[in-house]
Length: 115
Image (tube, rainbow, N blue to C red; front, side):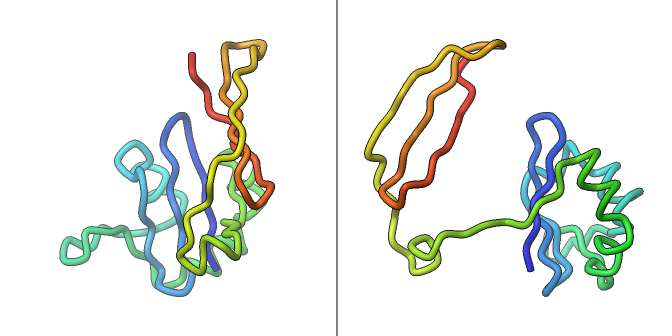
């Protein structure tokens, strides 16, 4: 199973099947070392923990509360290799700045901070 978690602008993906941690790991390397007990694998150029599933199970509430740990949801179209089309774009003014909301052909939405 794959999970994602983030801190500030860095988001990482945790793959419990392989034990690999990928993504924007540089800004989160202290969390990866201290909280996920992973080590750097220079051959694969990824962080790795053989027992990643049990670490996530044991500290899931802490990781969810502090770093927004959640299951990585992949749509069926993305799994089949088909690119999703953007069918609508909308610029909205939030409390802390402007956001662009993209609507995709499968009905999903993505909110991106613009400035």
